[in-house]
Image (cartoon, rainbow, N blue to C red; front, side, top):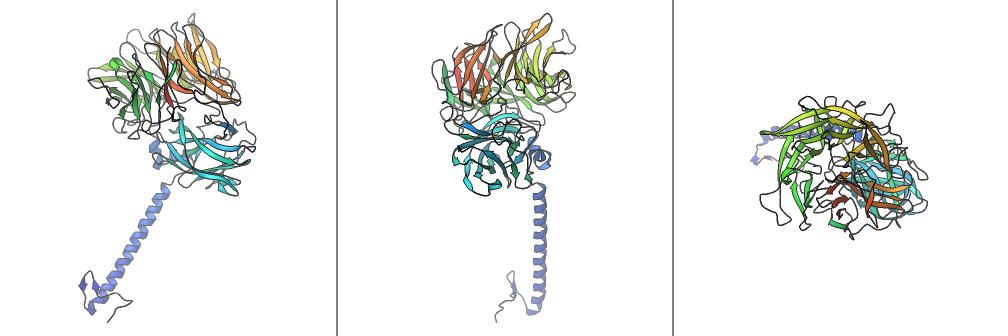
Length: 633
């Protein structure tokens, strides 16, 4: 007899008698109902959990979401590339610019199912590439993005071109929410469209995090038809985003080795990272050191280019554990030990890298990493910045946050038998004394001098915030350090938001300030001591209008008091300049290298005992991924 269409009388291998079959069927049905209910409940819970952790459309919403806020707890402290109005791919010219990167208001998700569209007017020029600006999680690197150019928003209407672009990115800065602000570039397109919509979606990153397109609302745009209209697929109309469309037939080729200039390393983005923006430091013998994001672990690494053979050597890969991650470029301390800051724990740490006991004869010698000091959140430091030593072996640094008032502090680490002792020398209030210290030097008088990005203002309302140059006077014996404000920026013709300081051999302070509406793209200023006060003077301002691309390095002083820096700009008609210059004590800048092609260095400069100057570019080089260069002087 067949049991077709019925439950068989065999359950789990046991043959049942007919009188037991009914009970078995009932139990089986109850079991199936239980499994169904369990799976339904699990799916509902999973759906609810998924909804709870859904990627918000904007970066600020993500920063407030428990699912993602923890990823911003330790923001990247990499040295920023210069702020710009418009930064273009080196081999392209801008045919539509929707305004400068903002990086502080908000940004919109372009992955995890979200897409964003912005309108443009290209006046019939072929689109060969585009640049857009993003908010990324610290250390994360944009890899690809799906793009299309269409006649209607969100991919509608006529499709003029589409594809998946492998992108390159350049770190610009970190913002107040903990995100990295990056410029992302796509090249190799060939799309004819007089006007239309640029659509971005399905972006991928090295760590798989959300990626957000910067919202700038078109403020500062100069192209016909800007600011753009913008749409987002989940909310509809949104403010416009920061992007450029580029076309071929662009500016001159990249700089090359020749004369006093030598490219000593070409980054390839595979084995050694790419697009460096953190600059370098050099020891007396010409060994060059720097830090990069990514690496074998994804948490960044410190590298060396040895003077004896110019081989690239990864000294240490950070793991993101007790050793921290995303290191800043180091400084050279006593006995050739490297010191730097990194993310780690709640509030960052100071690390050291020590060479092995025997000389390294290859390009694969690893150094030993140690955590010099782990900040705890109760010691007044939150996110340590640049470091420096004094002649007594004390280590000083700045903290953009923390301090007694939450507006940053200057700290000291003094060596002791049991390690290092930390002391807060000064806490900023964010008022007239400044806020957010971001650079520090030891003056020739033994006092500390530095800059803050905010505070000050002399009663002006500053955009960006004004900032100050300060002096911390060393106590004669015991006691506390005293702060004096040397200069308070107005945000007018003097610039604003100073971020760099150096001192020449006569005691004059030189510094760099960001752009303001009244000032040029970059302002270099001088503060000269005079009868117990300081006299402010603008030394140089980059042109204010019609710049396609500009950059500048930090200032660096050698032991003789000469101050070096490099600057470059390119105009819409491909005029401009690219110079490495030196300021002798008490004198004006003179040029020691005039680049014959594109040369856009940024970050700190390295100096050795022979006055050779070292630096990085985020682009150019053999593989287009940036260089480390040296100018013999």
